[in-house]
Length: 85
Length: 461
Image (cartoon, rainbow over all chains, first blue to last red; front, side, top):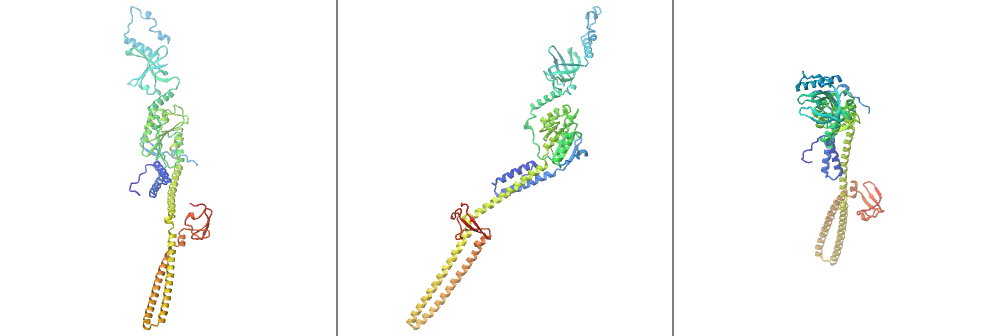
């Protein structure tokens, strides 16, 4: 563990690509035990973030008024046909 | 028509008799001519080639319309120029509708154009080509300008009509691929007068909403006139200046609009636009899971590797032999102790025999008192000797027991219970300590904590 502050996670995309490059680094297997455990922890954090982001969006369909205000869409739109499969 | 045109100028000699000749001022003549031309050529169509085209600061367009034999000045006022869908350029062959009038200050007649259309290529097509060329020249189509789409948009902005099929198509695709997506629609007309302005305003609204990080501009298929709004320069510019990437999905596969060229990504249809913008949720989830699996196994593999390294280190000669060596020391100790014991025993025996001999000799000498003294000393010496011997013996025995105790702790059997194994030659006569002591093909016996293995040496290293 280092005292350096945990690098923040910018967005889903950067989290996923950091996770994947981190996995590659780990798979090279040239790291010290401490470093690889540190990366592992970071990786777990990143994947948790990704899962959260994946779920957090709320299904919402809104329509803007002429003044740019959002209101929920008319039922005919938000009840878009749910497909089978 | 003939009668009118010939009316005043038909025969100047007869119509203007010398005595009461009618003298026009320039102004009245010009005015008369103007009236004549304007009433006669009030709405006519003329075709010709444009030359000397120029737009003045006032916004009016001036040009000359010519054919092989002659030419006529033409003007199109700003209010009409606004509605032109292409840019008149020198060399273009056009048809214009207008009226003939006279420009009083110069006494020149000219045609005031109300409508202008290119011959050959349709006006819209020409306009399209012109705008495309111009924007391309500006670099607005450059691939370097294209922004990548976000992998997981937080909110998706949609610019389209609420009435069309496009919006339903898009919502269907999104609902299927990523049901919990947040969508914000900025409804606009997508064809007709004013549609372009609405699209521009919608792009502005959506671009300003926090969380919207991609915008779809969409419209279903139609004729070039129907899709025209998406060929308007202001729409094109609004797309290029949008703060987030814009995906165009206008018309069908074969329709290309200027919006398509300037968009960060062109989709063939509205549905295709939605597909480009929304990666299926399950795909993303699977990607994360794969990364997690690899993460776990990479770390596990790392730990196992280290464990193996420690195990190998454990068996290196420096460390590996130590239980055996301790055992060896133990045996040596036991042997020493045994030799000591027998040495003591034989020494004591010899002394006792010596004492017997001496006593016999003394007794034989029969030296009374001295003999008694000597006997007493002898008895004491014997006692001392016996004691000393006993002590020595006890001490050795104690140490021996301690050594044996230690040995038991380190006994091969105890070691075996911790996972070590002893490798013997097949006849169990020799413990194999060195790989060079056996040959490939030779049989060895491996003693485990429980049971034994009959093995054959495959190779030695």
